[in-house]
Image (tube, rainbow, N blue to C red):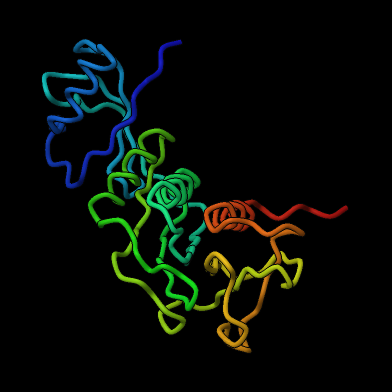
Amino acid sequence: MRHVPHLVVAAPWPDDRLALSVIQWRHLTKVLRMSQGAPVTYTDGLGRVGEGRLGNHEIERGEEDTRDRPVEIIVAAAPPSSKDRQRYLVEKLAELGVARLLWFESRHGKQRVASASKVFSWVLAAVEQSHGAFLMEVGSEVAGWDDLPPPYVVATPTGEPGPPSARTVVIGPEGGFAPDEVPPEAPTWSLGPTILRVETAAVVAAARLMSPPIAMA
């Protein structure tokens, strides 16, 4: 069965046809070699999804529905040291369906992040690749402890085994947090016996928070 491309087309959708960007059109017709009339799926990135057909520089809209985000997960992560690792973190969290990513300020962190336009392009590609319905929000500013939406939990190697009740998780920098950096009242959560990279810890934490609880017999 041939792969059906998935496209993000910004709202509003006032007409029965959705205009495609030049980049989207070229990718569909030049790279994927699709012809008019071929099936495509699409989303506005806000939960609305549809199945349509490729037209001339546009999508002919078809059957549509609106999805609810299953759970609102927020990840606050210290920026990894390289752009490639930042890209991995952004793409994987967007594929999982994380609602929001905050770049987190820490004493041991680099604090240097990719441009907002570059990060958005990573989110866009990840949502299209994963056939998602929601664009992950990523701020361009670096957040601190006072900016975290409560309740939150801090991932540390010596934390509680969990799972936590919080839906916001804080991932520290390479080398970990400074000894007196984490607020004393903040709950902590251990992701396992090994020390994980920032991007690995963020993905593991998000996946665990998004998984439904296991029913006990």
